[in-house]
Every structure is written in C-alpha cells, then in structure tokens.
Length: 393
Ligand code: SF4
Image: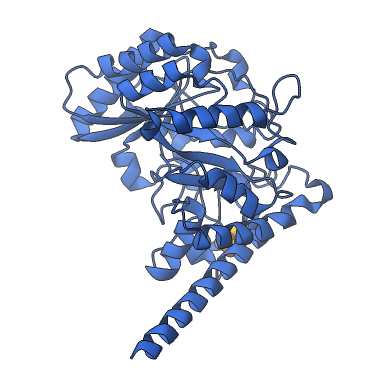
C-alpha cells in the first residue's frame, strides 16, 4: 500500500480508480493497545469506532472475500491487494488473525485473482509465532514507528501514558533476527518536529526496511497549532531529505520520491499519503479513506456494507461522489506555482468547518519549503555530475 497511491492522482478514488479499484483495507480490529496522542481513529473528531465490534468476525471476513471476488470477476481484475489494519490487528491473537486471513481468501474461493496482502501493526505484540504465521500465509508486514525514544516517547504512549519505544525496539530486534524477516516491508513514521531527522532516519534505516513513509500529522485549519509547531515541519522534512538522499542504505520514501519524480520526469505529483483503497470496517461497513476521521464525526461513513452492497454500488454512492468532488484541489492550489509538485497536499490537511476542503493545505508553507529544497538539491546534484563528466572528457 505504500506505493498504491500513484503519482499525480487526486485523492478519493479518481475516475480511473473508481472503475478498477484494486486495494481493499480491512479493519480487523477496532481497538488498540496504544493511545498515541495524534491518532486519527481515537483522538480526533470521529467517534464511530465506539459502535464497532472489537474484532471482525469470520462471517464478515468471508463475505468480504466474496464481495471482492465478485467485483474482480465482473471487472476482469486479475490482481488485488488486501491490507489488514486496525486498531491493532495483532490484538486478535495469532490463531484468530490467521483464521480471519484464511476466511477472506476462503470467501474468494477458487478465484484466479492473484492476491497480495500486508498487515499494518504498531509492533508491540509481535512474536515468533505471529511472524511465522504471516510468513506462511505470504502476508507482508508494515510497522508504525516514529524513531528512537527521543522522537517517539512524547506522543507514542499506551493507555497508562507510558512511552513504548523501548518495548518496540525489542520487537524490532526480534524481527531483525527472525528467519521470517523477509516479510518486513517498511515503517510508517509520524513526524515529531522536535526530533532530529537524521537520527530518526538512521534509526529506522538501521532495521533495513524497504520503505519508510514519513507522515505529517493529520491536522487541519481548525486544529490549534500550539507554539506554532507547524512551522517546524518544513525544516524537519528538508533535513530528513538530506539524510535520505545521502544514505548508503537505499530506502524508498514516498513523499520524497513524489517530488523527485515530479521534478525529473515531469509528472504531476500529489504530496498525499492517503491510500486509494476501499476500507471495510469490523462490522462489514464500507468506508471512504479513513484518514477523513480527523475532520468531523462520521466523515468516512458511507452507510453501505458488504452484506447488502457491491463494490460498484459503493463507488457510485452519492456520499463518495460528493467527497470525490470536494477532493478536487481549490483554485488557490490550481493557480499555485508549486501545484505541479504539491497537488494541494493531503485532503485532510485542507479541511476547515467553514468551507470544508476548499483550502490549501494547512502545511502549505512547509510543502513549499520541501519542494524548493528538493529542487535546489537536484540542480546541485546535476551540476556536480556535469562537472565530473566535463573533467573526465
Ligand atoms: S497547498 Fe500550498 S503549495 Fe500546495 S498547491 Fe496548494 S497553495 Fe500551492
């Protein structure tokens, strides 16, 4: 799912994705063993999780598999990506989680559709047994980690307000030593703007992830910015880019790759880390991009479910169509010199109660700062390459 959102596409299921959606995000647990301060599920506007069953049932998982298969058959889709998310999916326990994964695939029957899968976890419940089970079922692993204690402990806490970085570090060491470590795909890292970006990058890349997704917190124009913290993210991202570009360990990173891609290849980019997958909640209800939960209560709810509706019905539902229309970047962004590389930023970053998504990103200046820095760095790299080539000639 790190690379599911393709460069240059607007958010919330643009037309070509509505026609052929191929990523499905299954919320198999609606509760979490952590209580991260910035969490968009539990600590922002939305309260829908309280009405969800704690875990997805086998019945919902099977039905979801059937609905995905039927959709793929009708649309002649040959590859799908199924993501297992929460809450914290490992709270299910190894056996129940394995049974749910099997139930989804069982629901797909003898379909010829090729299924790739991955699980997103906070990592604290990782064990040898879980790793073995996921490996056996060919499920990739993504771990949420904001870096070492100095970067993580202020925000990444449990329900007793205790930081968890030390415990997670032990789990990451377990993963690094595991014979099943090849399932490990990468990290999701929410940026702590007071941390040292080089130290965070060094820490994460030391575990040899294939990718690290650096995420700006899902704030919007109505969330308070105590101490003008937002101004710090531009500096953080530029310094992290320096660490990324000069590192001997090659790690994919979507936010940087999108700008580089826009600058070098010329494709229009969107600094948008939202997934273009269709979300299925624990009770089988369909949801739009669940990061919308940071904006207002019920923002991602569609009122449709796997027992009564097909994927096609979801994709043409009035609520999703309104969201899709609102996801179009505002005029200010479309007329902006940075639009080619920024795309207006993440949809949730544009929200305000007064005029919903008709705003530039709340991180507009920080996006510009990063784009300027990447552009400048690329020019310098090109100049130094040209000088080397001239010297050789
Ligand atoms: S968010 Fe800001 S930088 Fe990005 S396109 Fe809109 S106005 Fe330009």
